[in-house]
Length: 295
Image (cartoon, rainbow, N blue to C red):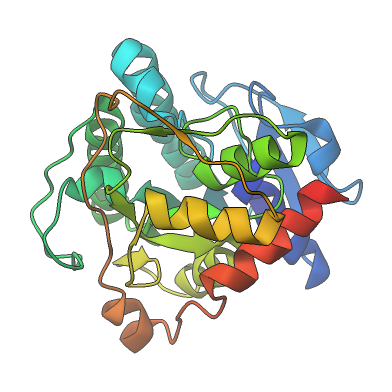
């Protein structure tokens, strides 16, 4: 199969590329390398440097669209830029896929699109984004499902929890696991914004890759991809501290704009319709991530 991975030089995208190559697919990465890294791209994949804010053409059977502006803080400070990448960029990818006759798997966000929740949010929950990032992803989802309906494309939406694992960037605020572990490896101070009781659904990257592959087998649908369990930032820090063998206490700073208080996903639909569920425990995932940082 010929596969395109936008954002394939990034954290999640590079893991998707590796898994596609491992099963024998022909893979092309489309990435402007603004946040992705060339060294993350396996030499067996073709790398095309391109900014998805500009139209382009592709040849593929399936497109995994992961290129995004994924930093909530940046979306608050630069909402127009965020929309250009996440909305206009998605439309350019959709048009390229349509012209190629390819199906598409779009990676959206669970936490930022549902906003604050009281219990695990199903796909039918109201969409109440609390940041421009979540708003842009909501708009992009509408384009994906609308383009599929109008043009008869195969297109699936996956709403991801807080993904973590090797290659995650500590420079982006969503990479809290990478931030904690890298600073602990350096013996540097760790910072928790707010009281630390905000919670997230942390899902390991290889579990996410399996979910994306399962979604690629479907012609349509919106599926949450998480664990169904949320962990507070305070509890996450404690688990990271144990894994890293650190005794350092975190410093608490002011809360950040755009942060949801609680984010956790109901993943029962993915279990029923995709036959998928997360397999990695948080402890196992943290240990694997730590091993990639500490070596």
